[in-house]
Image (cartoon, rainbow, N blue to C red; front, side, top):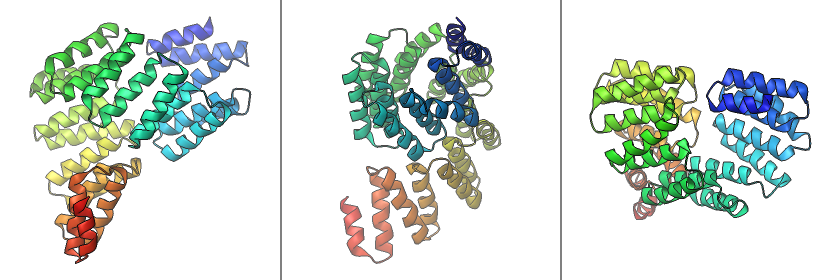
Length: 363
């Protein structure tokens, strides 16, 4: 019963109480693998990585090696350490090649690192092993969403919904996709369905704010960003979205304040660092802007947009060597970035390297 109470309170968002019940379950049965893993997962979500790692490594050294390695992969993924996360996910698969949860987690990692074909393959393997695996269908939707193939994403989200019709996560994903299709009414429809299941579902609250902001209904946007922050004062995305609203209103001081609050909660929040760079770029402080863009890259070394933006600044400063270096990193992680490929061609042209200029123009 303690384990079940832990699940219940975790689902309710009461992490502290859930942790206490999982700990009680472990005191009664020190071999209770699921309790250990769920407890470590909560520690990971709280960014208490040392405590999480200790538990995952204990599991990895026992009969539950696959689950332990998978947990370590999830922890390092949460820390944006993708190479280490991939290593542990693959160690988990070495222990159990048919573990659909690991394959789905690996699919998510590949999506985040823009290895889309590998992501799709991994999710489909998970579905082959466990037909009707809604989490993997959601993952496929997320991958196609990242590829900006929104109609295909909707198809997979709807398949996920067939197998779990009360998934607030899937309903949110559908609402978010309609936002990117500029379909205001459908976006609200599905976000509200998610909120009917969980009225304090923070991600749906701030995304409603994003919908209002996109359609320039700024007062309503601010209302929902505030509601999201009230529901979870540690939700860094809500502060970031509020910052975006203030940035669009050219209230850069307020935007900077919100982005800084995001970063205080999550120092590896690459988008917030990037957005800070945008603020200082608009304020004319180029050096500080570059510094913040580089902070974004420190947070995620695969962040193509940050590389291309830094490259653009150096390009404007006629520092073509630094511009080229950053542009090349951008297309390393986003090979389909046509504009940056053209910029690379320009850099080689300015350096009188016409052969390489031709190669990148043709790309």
